[in-house]
Length: 185
Image 1 (cartoon, rainbow, N blue to C red):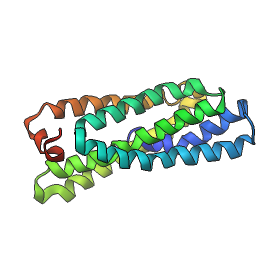
Image 2: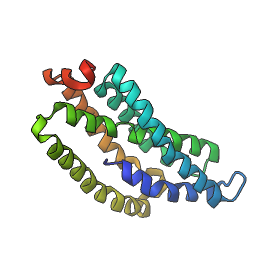
Image 3: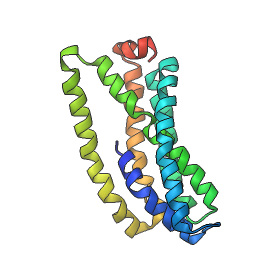
Image 4: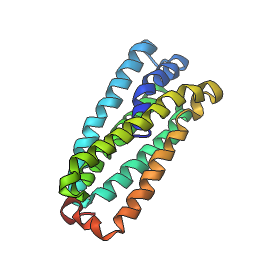
C-alpha cells in the first residue's frame, strides 16, 4: 500500500495541475476529474484481470509484474506533467490498473500461507501495517511537490514496489510458496 493511497489521494491534483498547463480541449478541471475517475476505476479491471492471471501463472509472478509496472509509472508520470493530456491520461490509467492489481494477491497469499488458526489475525496485521504506512506517503507527497515540483513528486513511491518485488522474489524461492494459487508460485 506504500504507493496506492498516495497515488489515489494526489493523482487528481497532479492531473488538474498538468491539464492547466496543457488543457488540450475542454476545461482542465473537467478533464482532470474524468481522468482521475477512469484511472482509479481502472484498478477494478486490474484487480479482476490480476486475479485471473495470478491463478494461471502464479501470485508471485503477477505481483512482481504489477509492481514493476506501478513502480515505473511512479518514476515516470511526473515527467509527463504538462504534456498532451491524452498521454498523461493513458499513463494514469496504466498506473491505476497496476497500482492495485497486486493487493488482492497479497491477501490471498497471506490466507494461503498462514496457519489456519491465524489467518484472520495475519490479514488484520497486513491491513493495519498497510494503512499505517499510507499515512506517511499521503502526507509526504505534497511536501515533496513543494520542494521539487510534480516532476519528481511520485518517484519516491517506487520504493514500495521495489521492496515488494524483492520480497516476492524471495518468497518465490521458498518451499512453502508451492501452497500459493494451487501450486502456481
